[in-house]
Image (cartoon, rainbow, N blue to C red; front, side, top):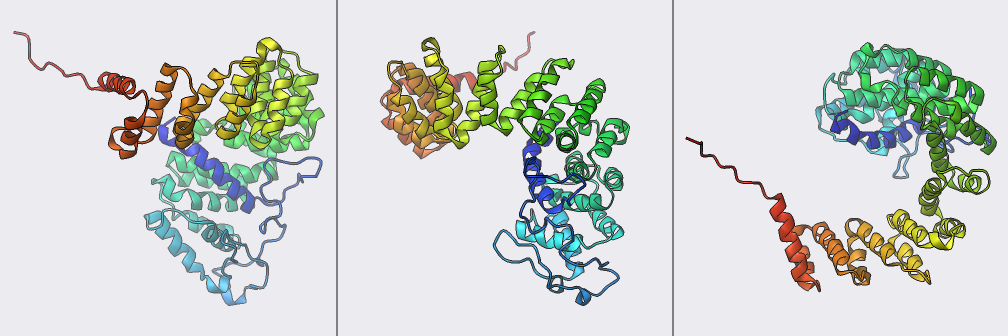
Length: 458
């Protein structure tokens, strides 16, 4: 998989949240208070309704003056209503799409996206197809990803299979196809997760880029909605996926996210021991920790006694600590034996200093009757690049000269290195300046290109 594709995965996941929230219509499997979904991005959203915000009409068959603009309209991120269709002629959509695809516009903000959604949600299938054909077969996915996801998700509302077929015939850019498929699957998985699964399982890889088969962006939402519908059916389909050498980890993550309660989750986890994949059990526990660290922590304390207990607890600490530092650290430390105390403190320093360096340092310094130097070193090493000023302020607390110089070197590079006046100022005032200079010289010498002898032997 290319570096560009990998780099775009995070970006795509964020946009999926927006597209799913705006475009996924209410399907046959309705969320209930007892079965919350991590994919429910549309709760209390202006777009979350059975009926579209405007009456059905074909923009090429009716005058925009005939459209009722008194209905609710989407609200933008600036707190203003998106313009009514009377103020937004249909051909303006095509002009803005052309500008976007030509590179005149780099991206659209939430207000512009809501305006485009208000129009395209009223288009017929043929009209949406006409807009999709404006997308070049090759091109910059950063430039085109927003309209691709919106247009194909809306087409999927009419017919997911047709949307997938047109996506394959229209897009040749791998990144664009990935984005289009992810938005279609978000819609399809909620409408009919079983049909979506059968499509992914039986798709001929020759008809699409092989990298898209069994991608998490497809299997995770499918299995999330399957689990809401029927957890036993989910297990059956997971076994089919394993037999087909599919991406079991993505499917397990989706199933855990969609499971309705703790009893379903723990029962599902127990079933993972029967799978051939040696990591299936670990995937399931990790997914539960990510979804609900508090519930997972209680299960780890009362029902799990396996050899991975401490590793799972570290994961729960990292996730839980982001929302409740005090409760997470208290839980993690309460089961530590005297021999484990130092390592547990180091774990807190390693896992929580990314989020709250000052709070983590304060907590470490309150620990008594134990050497906390390694924990302090870990906190400042983590902070050197992410919270450089914090690391500079507390650097003197590292007692080991060698460890302190290593952190100082990272601070120096974080400040810009040789090309930065701020870095030079830090270097000039550092107490171990000469030792740091020597270390920097060693690194520079090691990275200096070797001179090649161009003379030829006689």
